[in-house]
Length: 536
Image (cartoon, rainbow, N blue to C red):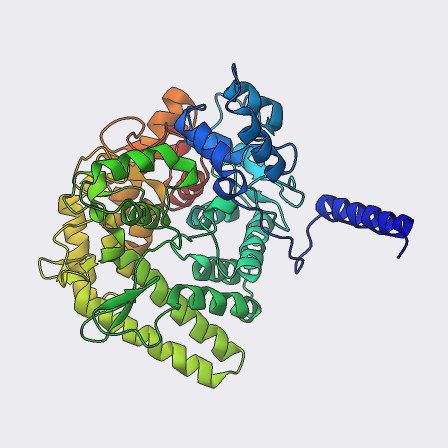
């Protein structure tokens, strides 16, 4: 082959690559997943995060390289030892900051409901075209982000956002988000924590079956169960990977086989390194855990992030110190309730698809899991709780996760009412249902109340005719949301159960906020008579 011919072909390849990178994403296409920053430019990544170049460690991993990461890494290695090297200037010259979205001022006297309706368009993002070397994952359709530093699509957040979109008459936006999640399953084999390359090693609480149920129910289209059956089954395979041949009293990936043979699930992460978005914090936590291998601590922190409760005393060995975290030793009651709903949903979809063998298999799996939950995740004191599979004991700690068996409808009436009584006496506060009764400084402990758990509890209580408690909880939470809105004119990620905005955790309080918007609209629809006027 002649040299001009080779040059021509190389030019053609470059043109095609550029065209592909710039073309809108279509369902079924499979662009290569970008390398996470800690792999794309490892030495530079570590230097930037160790130097705390940015106040929020998520900032750098969301920045977009202006050229090939390998070239930037090589350039850094060549220059870092030179006199007068300026790391900040080096990064500024080679990276673009994440896209910022300046929100226009909204009317300050709008009702809470009208304010949320006006917020939705400000939280919509479109990732059909993404920068070639950044950490953002492409998606086929626009979607709603939580807000603040959370500038990408998140898994479990989105279910509660979708509830609110339906209340706002934006059913198509909600359906688009379901399609985005189906695309993620098709593309990566699971739904990642969020749509960043550094989130691909884990997922989040599996709400995909609830999303399918929401769209099928809201639109009166039962055929959607069959349409999304391939993705439902793929999600299940991801969470159950490693179950075959697992010995009693052992665990593999997300699966635990208890000593009696029961198969349940846990949170887990495929990586055992510091989280890129919280790199320095994880290094510091591991350093405090004397006698524990650092990679063990990192995996536990990552698994805690997958739980959505990052972090909470329910994962901590001593219930107080983050470095005692042991998430993978816990069989969570919320996760297994969601998995049971996934099994039931697959059984329903298979039945509609006239696949009786599949329907029978998954109905049996769902019943087997229900029995295991009743056997192992019930505290005789009168509430559902997590199970420590390594120690062989049910947790003594009551958390808001106890509402999940009610939410998915697998609790017996007796146990549902007992759990409701425990939630009322131990976790109900003036601002709603606190996550736990312990105040540890972790954000998923007291005194914080979180919108998604308010909805899970309210919906679960209503399912078992605990209507007075559901109404009281909902109105307490709405009163807190309305009070903060009246004083600060915003909705935030979490709230303080006693007064004002929530606190604790690894980052400043975020506003926006997707799931708070969604749950607030649902609760206003159920219990909001006159509430809008109170928020003016």
